[in-house]
Image 1 (tube, rainbow, N blue to C red):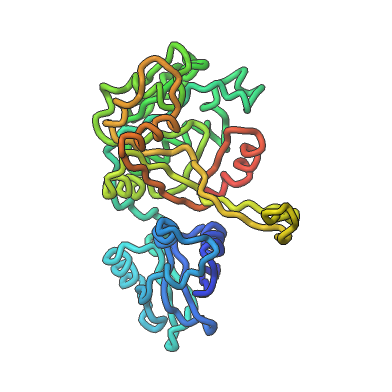
Image 2: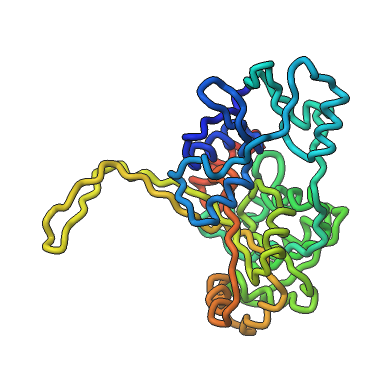
Length: 352
């Protein structure tokens, strides 16, 4: 049995690593005797981080007590299916008479490997920024545009679109410039079962500037994605997070850990050594390149000039708007925009 248990004294960082390692969406919180005391989901961790808690904090205040479970002697396949359908959960722990976790069953196993249906369908446009030259991926991008970079058995652009398609999205737009004809030809030949439109820049306008070409088509909140990232997350939950909190922009951020392999010298006011911190570890939330935008923010983008999405965020804040941050785990973000990261992506893509 795969171990998806965790102790309440574990840190948020350890919990995120455990979720990535197990590839499940929930951990079972147990005491020293493996007695079930709670459950911890990726959503629980996200809400905890958004409260300003550090990744080194323990999970005691983050997990939910009294999770749904079944006793071993009560186990019945049809009953298990009914519990899943009633509670809309991903995992059900199986306990012995002492409430110790002895096994668990996932939705996929209970329903014959059928994927759990998404809680919400997305009826929202998706814009993919596909106009860059991809200079960090040369020489490949001297031959083909970056969105057609193969990742596994298909181009990265198909990975991106397929993840949105899983949530019912059917309206896509590509902003294009570099090798625009090749991208158009690819989708014409593909003849997809979804709507796809193109906004072609006559010259590079930046990651937000090209959105002005789509003003007349983007009349409700919409996603914007870079063309070199794959995000494994609940897209419906991201959208719900954006709308429920009335954000003008929401950016998806990855919790990254950085280890400094040296002793760091800290000085006092006189320039003398205060202390040496050996091999410190730092945690950051890093922008992944996936966003949700309200159509009103398009009015803040100047016409016909280079304007990046970071400039747009500054404009939103200057106008007293609000920007949300939706955290995902480190492994939920695959960046194929440079060769070092691309090689890492090839190693993990089969496990997605």
